[in-house]
Length: 598
Image: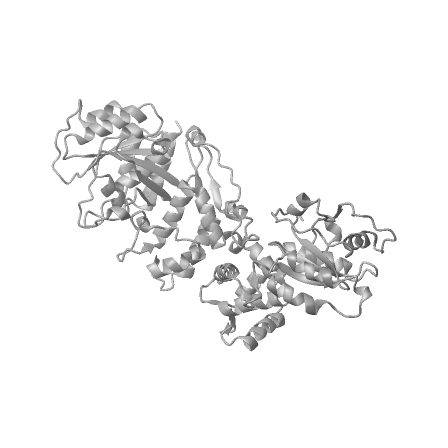
């Protein structure tokens, strides 16, 4: 079997127990008249084995330690008519699946199981014991079937025979599987959810009678295993304990592997991080199917139906994660309600931000939520759209992207943080502690009737150490304080050093415009600077308002990000239509599109 394990060397095998005869009888289907010192290594093809896996059989001797170290399962053979060989079995146990094989059962009328059972109880790595006979071919094929099963469906990671109960890691994995499968989050797997689970794991739904039979078995053994005619978590765990105790490990392993678990009951890296090609100059976004799935996850946990996630609901949502993925800064990154809880819009915004900034992390998160299973997709990668290169958008003068990034530059105290929080509907009355501070803000805007995401990123003011990430964006926001005569100089220096010769559009933002404007200590005024460099005129902005600050500036930023070849006149024209009716937006959009195509 194509798995690799590291084994400690075993003591030399006991001679004359029939190891070689067993292998020869399996291959030739008859007892060999002449038994060689050691059988040649053989491989049984996958198509002739019950588990459909190739099996490589090695006749072990003390000189084959290298072969032993590559084994996935070890069959320890003893002779049922030789007490010494039975006693030596307990000296050979190692931390890999083991099968005890009592050969020469044709020579005795009694069983060796009474002697073997205490040994099996002392060593949890022993999967089973098979008594057989190489001479009359008794249980020979069964022996190798159990050997395969011990590799593919080992008992060790699942069950503790001393406690007669599942191990904690197995309980943890099955608990996550239950919660993912509980589509309405009521703590019960109803008939619809059980059938979906059955079809997902075993490619076939349960018949109505079979479904009732399963629940009746649980009812008879556990009073709280069935509730409202549905299976509770306790009942679900009891069923799997029963499967394991009855030797049906493959049932539990099929479920575990379908939900992404490996042999160590950890989520497989291939499951969490499916391959995703990301060409240069492209971005990553969630597609429609992924948003539908995330909407269902939100609805599942928004128990009070207030379109926001309370702290308890948020913890419940992420209970299927090994850690809390969102820190306190998320509450200052996306929109929240009056109680400070993440709204539905803020929830989708945070997912959009994660997908854009770190798509591998997004794939991991979707994996924990069971996206590929619940959405019935091949992997989480099917929920991701990789956008075409930005240079193609510029050539075609159109884009299908939904997320646009604006990097916000400004000197210390210029109002960058207030600008980001204003995008989330917050004025200066809101105070943020340093530990909860976020350098990102993301929400939706509407450009000519189309909903888009605008991602604002506050860049650290030391412009001598700007990284590629600080410079990569769709539009640049240069923020200066109208009341500080030295504030504009920083914006001018950043523009001339990094963006004057680039194709990234820039917009000057005159922050704190509710205050008296002072003359900037620079060679020219902000307006003259913008005219000289063919930028839109400085956009007045303040978050010192009684109500939520105006969102006009954010619509303008998104518009220019969508259409970076727009002229100064186009941007000025677009501002005339902010707040107009839907039809006037459509009329202007046609005019604007015509200008873009000249």
